[in-house]
Length: 192
Image (tube, rainbow, N blue to C red; front, top):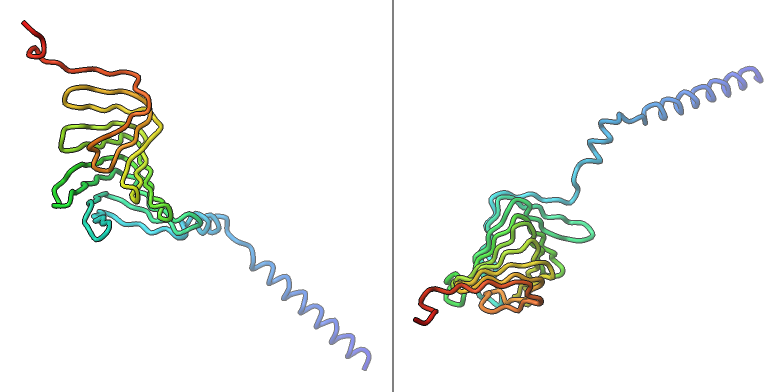
């Protein structure tokens, strides 16, 4: 019985070793397969040809259009518009009171704020136009602000400076530091 028992133990050990080697041998991953899995964006939604309406307090306040949108669902939920955007802001009678264009936007959902950058332009129906490279839009406070260089074109002057705060309708603004100004005058403004 001893030889049969030792033969059984030997076969069982050999079988266990074979199964162990087979198991570890099958866990080898192809590098390209691993790279493909790791490169996938998790928690990202993509949408094209966006048309979104903004309302506050039950009133229509704006219409946003953009060719591409990504929505990230990770530790910091956000929406990115990487390929330009345009927003029409409406007054209470739904007439356009100001417009905004930018090449990039990032909306922070939990803060209700939008970071705009690259060729940001905001203009109103009075003919005032703001140009800057970075601008924050606080949707809750309905205002724009930046601490970066800005240029404002008005019908009668051009103001160049650093930093700005303005309501969403852009009817007024406060520039923090004016570095240059150009006043436009016609020949009618001079006597004689």
